[in-house]
Length: 97
Image (cartoon, rainbow, N blue to C red; front, side, top):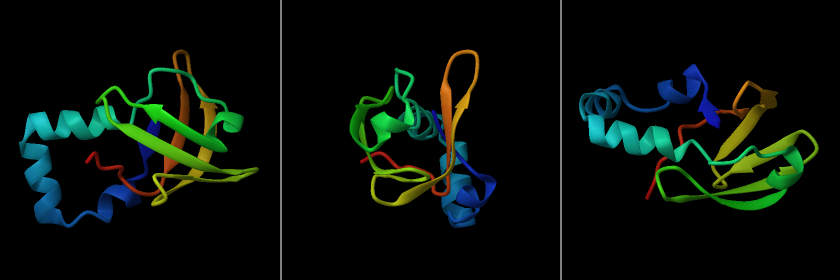
């Protein structure tokens, strides 16, 4: 799971965010684009390409403590293990094509 920070949502102009929040289908596409159907280790993020639940593809690059998703969003905190996922906190909302 790639979970955007509150600041990531704040980067989206209010009118655009309100429009997305009012459109359940678009909101679902965006949210499911942030979820990969497997647990990802930091090593897999070094140079990866993964299908999302939305059926799009995200790419990851980096190493050590520095990773990016789709060349636009930085991982600010990563590999947080939960009962059913590894969560990576990102600084930008990922938008499907």
